[in-house]
Length: 191
Image (cartoon, rainbow, N blue to C red):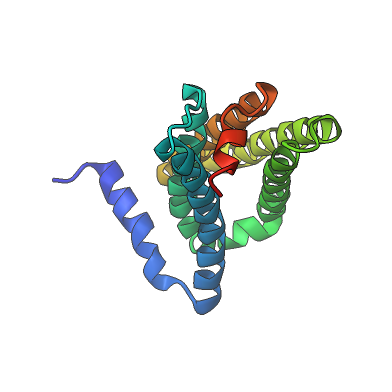
């Protein structure tokens, strides 16, 4: 007899079969955006590594965090487009949009901070802190819904890993910036 959580997981993932065209479009765009981040960051780091650039070990936490994040949102988004779609229209979806906008803009600001360090330091920090804050708001909304019996363990575990991946990626990236982006100048010579 399968474990109850594995049954829940299988049912949750199986709901992807009920995706409408708009759900697939949303899913592909959202996961594709994050896969683009993963491939661009990992590709850049591998380009440097293959050309004997030595990055500090913590830098590799950035793609690790992205992988965790992407895996978790790939799962979570299934429920958001099916069984919890109406709940997201009640306000959670708006919080997700705010969190995504802040998270994406914090990474853009951290990238721009490479050449405009003094100008983008504070905006990058504020955007990153706000993306984490809104992630906490989102988690509070999910826990409230879970405690009311309007969520499930699969969705809750996916949110744990979303949060873990987001924080690992963000803090590793911030630390890389704070240390002066070691390895970036050397890697840029190979582009």
